[in-house]
Length: 177
Image (tube, rainbow, N blue to C red; front, side, top):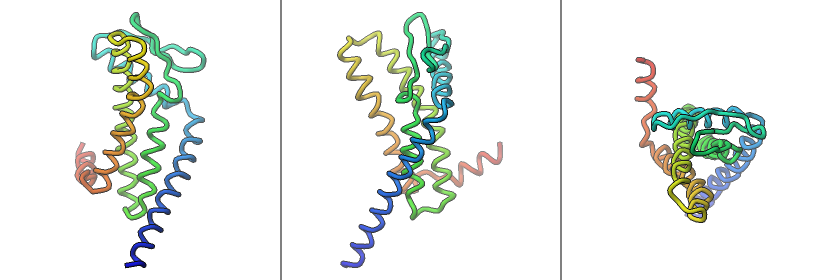
């Protein structure tokens, strides 16, 4: 029993250490790429067009900025999804008890989900700006906005870890396309 418990603590420690090192590495690495900011801005703009809101993307203080007649919003580092991608990649790749192929597929699916959900989160935030007073909007944007995607990624990780996500079927479907 004592040996089993120390083995569990060792595995947990290995996961935590690997997670923090990987998260720091990915955060540092992604900081050199503006691709994430631009992709988030473009996808957000596409979502807005689905809602009938015309927008353009301009460069304002070196950040892509979504501009419409209703608002102007710069996609700064914290809005780009970089931290969320670093978070899910670090968690999945640190799960050493799963096969590497399964971890890599998880990272790919997680990356796609962040690229689809983060701009949705931004659009919801932009739409909320017009219907909320400034203090409520500030709470919405600064707390709920940031927590929402991390919460979703934790659920994604949980489902992935428990094998509820069957990537074998996804790969077969992708091959048939």
